Length: 455
Image (cartoon, rainbow, N blue to C red; front, side, top):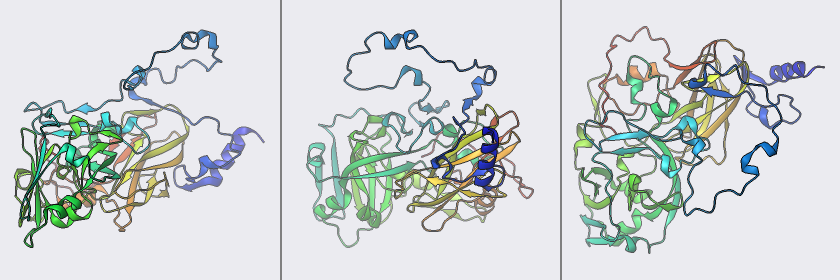
C-alpha cells in the first residue's frame, strides 16, 4: 500500500466532524506517515508562497554561525532580531497623547503565558515613571486603623502567586460593527494577556486595618496623572484580590503598573488598577467616569447594564486566522485560546463547516482557573472554501454565543464586553479573512463609534 493510500485511510478513520476535522489525539498516535505538517504563511508572502525552491541538505560549513564564536553574555536577554515583527501594536489614533491601547500579537504566539514585553497596554494619561522609594499605599475610610505601606513594607509580607488572564472590557469591540474587522487576530482581539502574578493577598492587609460593619466597597486609585478610580465589592476584595509586585518572576514593568498593581482575577481589566496608591473603604461605589459614562451599557430593551464585573467565556482561533495563508491542501493544526472569568474552561469545540458539525479540541494542560487555555485540533483542508470557528464552554455550563444571538440580546449600543464566536473564512486560494454569519433580521446597520477610550 502506498504512503498516500495509508494517509487517506488514516484520515478517513480519524475524521470526527464534517469538512476534515480529525481526532484531537491524532498527532499523538504512532506510526503515521504524514511527515511534516503543512505550514502557514502570512499574507505578505502570497506572491512567493508557491515558488519556494526545493528543500536541500544544508552543509554546516556554509553556515557562518557554526564557524565562529557567538555573542558574549548579556545582562538581560532580548528576542532574536529575526523575530522583530512579534511586537505590540499601539493604537494609531490617539486623540490625547498617552490615552490609548496596544494589542498583544496573539496570532504570533504560542502557549498561554504572555511575555512581559508583549502584555497588552491601556493607559489614560501615559505611563508614570514612579520612584518606588517614594511610592506609598494608603488604606483608609471605614477601617479601624488607617495605615500607609511603603514598597519595602509590602515586600516583607508573605506572598502568593497566581496565573490568570487580564482582559480589557473593550476587547474585540469592533465585533459590534456591521462589517467584520479585517485586522489580524491579535490586533482585533489582543487586549487580553496572561501572566503569573505574585504579591500580597488584599485580605491580609484589610484584616490588619480592620473593617468596620458598614464596609461594602473598596475604591482603588492609581498614581498616574489620570488618577484612575474603580469600585470593587468588599466580598471580592476579601476573596482572591491581591496586590501584585511581580509579573512572570520579575518586578512589574512600568507599563504594567510598577511598582504596585491590584489584581482582581477573572474580572474586567479596568478593575486591575495599575500604579496603585490608595484603597478607600466605603459603603457605596464611587460612581466614577469609568463606571458611568463608560461600562454602563444601553441594552436593546432600553435598560442599562452597570458593574459587569466577571469576564464571560470566550475563545478565539489564532491559527489559521485573518491575513494568514494556507500554502496548499493538506494537514494543518487549528489552535487558539479560550478563557472564562467564572472559572476553568470545560471544553472547546471547533467547526470547519460554519457550525454544521463540531469536534472537541484537545486542551493543553494544565487547565487553570481564570487563565488562558490553549486548544488544538488536527484539520485536513481539502482546498475548498471553509469557515472555521471555535466555541468554549466553561465549568459553570456557560457556552460562548454566536454573534447574532449576542446582538439580539444586547443590541449594538454597548461598545464593551463582546465575546461572540469569531469566524475565519479560508478561501480556495488559502487566504483567511474574518466573516460574520448571515443575519436577515438585523435592521440597524450603523457602526458604533469606536474610539480609544476603553479598558
